[in-house]
Image 1 (cartoon, rainbow, N blue to C red):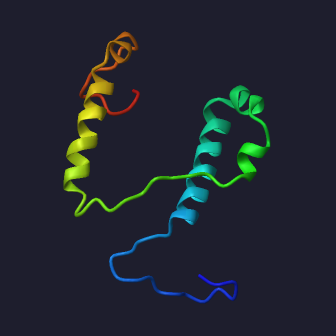
Image 2: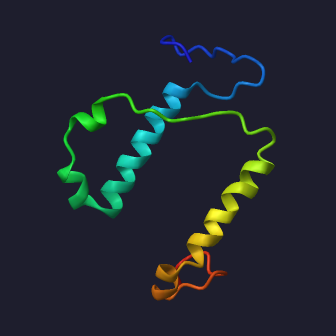
Image 3: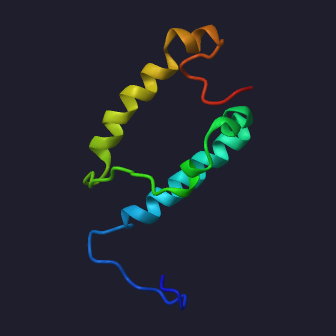
Amino acid sequence: MTVQRQWVPSRPKFLVHVHPLADHYRTLFRQGLQRDAPDLLKTLPARVWKQRWVVHCQPAGSGEAALRYLSRYVFKTSTSPSAQRAGKRPDQTRDP
């Protein structure tokens, strides 16, 4: 979108530019810290939130291969000893 709020279509096979994606990720990360770890957020210097973040993006085809790849790590995380100590079962997707 331009400054005049006019839609500018992207090139074919191009979803989003990396800079707005990095800005959005930075915002989501900060909001997550505000919600889950406000004391940790206070320890970070203010310049962290003002500088441009780097987010690595690359095409993943239809996404099926990326999903298979990432699913292994999600499964490992949910079945890890620390998750088991926390009392979570591998099939438990959210807290009761």
